Image (cartoon, rainbow, N blue to C red; front, side, top):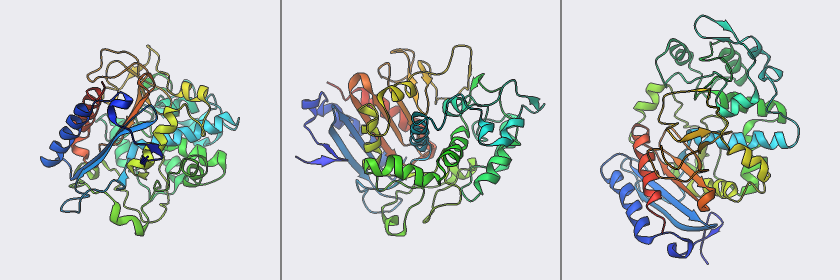
Length: 386
């Protein structure tokens, strides 16, 4: 039997998928490519541990060759779930606790302040806050508040920085909110990555290889693209939006100085499918099932403010490294309660649905149309079931 990403390929109807629905799904994404919203894309849908669809279409880049199934993509924020899984493996070993104050590992954060008035923190940032984005740390490109403008001007989303210098500079900037009071998407996972390095006593890339990438066979996933693999790297039509936001282009051909836990990985459709398959089967061999259940539960309480962003639509909460669907309704796209997912600023996206025993991945490099592609992805996936 043929395989993809270590999973057997099956006829769609044999695993509860609709061939016409999948072809319609492919047609929608292919249409967007043909209309110039991205040079190319790749799509995968699996159910019951078997692959019903794995398809690449369009071109590898502007005027490039056809998109291969093994193309390398900048997955940007889809780095965050991988790093958070590695951090939770340290929690399982008793080397890290969600209740630990961040200052235990990075003392500069003990004196962090809140808002432009530089108010004192009412309590310290915890590791739990970093994983669920309630630390008060923000991105500089997701809004225009004075704090966000100051963070943007600091240029911290930069893999050429020294990691410790970056952490010290970040700790000196104001937080958007008091820790634990609001969900604010930002640099929390980059800080978590530095904590992982300190606890594990190794560079982040090495920790990920040892704990996740090598055990799962994710041989193409790294913080850089080796010269011999450059010919497989997918390129967008342009970098205008990313450059304007101050987002690193991730063009490295060797390990960067700062392996950024929030945005830095390159990966392939097959490699990320191996990661999703691990999540879909409950975490083995990387995590225990109860640990993964904790990660994919909602950790945002009703009294917390939620940043106004399409990243957290109605009917959703956030766990540890993943957004989590909490209601069958309310949301603007189909899905099942308990679905967990995330995406990247270049348009990549994935979703794992325990209720449907299903996962799916979209790989694309089209930052300007990222929300458009994510909505197409979720709508198309909903129409792919029997």
